[in-house]
Image (cartoon, rainbow, N blue to C red):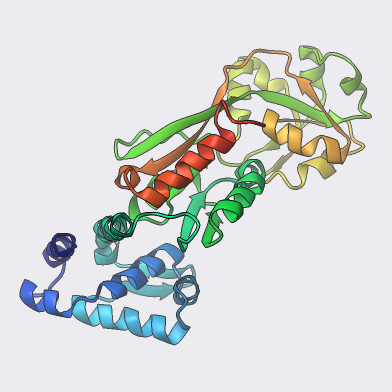
Length: 326
């Protein structure tokens, strides 16, 4: 534990304006760094305090103490929230890594017990990811680890890597390949795409042909990692012939738009299974071939040996992996 703390101090000392590392070592309170990471991830004093179980005034006081110790503003209030300074941005990764190592050491010394652990796991996924994963995952976590809380967030696709690297998220789930070497990915299952239509739509009563697919009006979901880009690629020049009547960012409105209409929407088989029955929709095979789309979970390599993190990853595999019972 002392070695971890010393390494953390060295990294902070290099990037700070403190003149004496011994002075910094004497001042630094690791609890302040927990507050630092919470504000870094939430971009809000209030939300960070709520996450840590602190009042807003206590959280603000902790940030001010760290500002004094590091001789930097760390966070500047803007309309978009608390924006980090260059020093805060530079510190985020080493601080997140060090706090993770400390948590690993504590869990290993005590022995991880899902039944008694108290912990929050931060997950990145799209709204369709929440539809696919959360119902079963939440029930499983509640049954096996009642002290664990799942916190789900949606961020732009190009921010997934930064969130995982800085500790803003523990896991990302979905069709979101991250190629950076510091990330680990695990393939859970393969999905195919199908066409959703109102059950009363004449197109739903027979095999969907390419001519019908191109001539009928489409509702396109532009959510991150949605499979429409694969449809466009498969269609090639024919993609421009599609009649798009609406583009939406989320799946919630799709069943209502399709209901009692001639419209089509391309979704994954898992989404179709969730949406079709309750909304009187039919799932139709596409009139062209697509390669299977891989659904994966991603995490930063620093979590590889974290007992709690490994427990959650294994649980996700048991629930959603290729050999999982449906």
